[in-house]
Image (cartoon, rainbow, N blue to C red; front, side):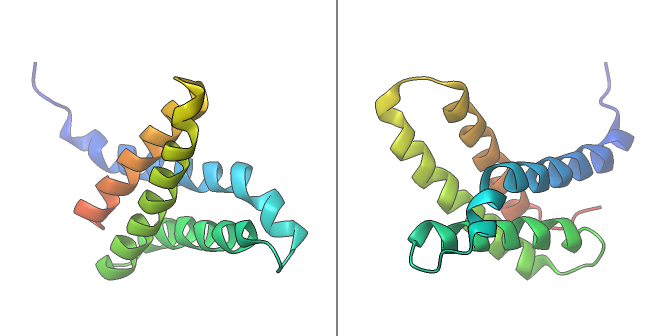
Length: 113
């Protein structure tokens, strides 16, 4: 069976939307508390910004910002994976691995249409 190449753009946009929704559900509460004394506030702010940039970069050909945003999301996700390894295999760990894979995709193929 041959692959359906027309679905590639749809899958990329679903990953962009999913990444944006994930960032919102996980990091927006920390961001909205606006506690400048906590390190997690800055991580949440940068993660949300990176997810928004990846989403917006889908409309323009700016590969550099997509690569850097993907790199930041990958680094934070790897950090989260390392922190979650002590708890064994969990759904949160699996989600972080999937998010890391999506970030690596955007690092390797930033704005391919």
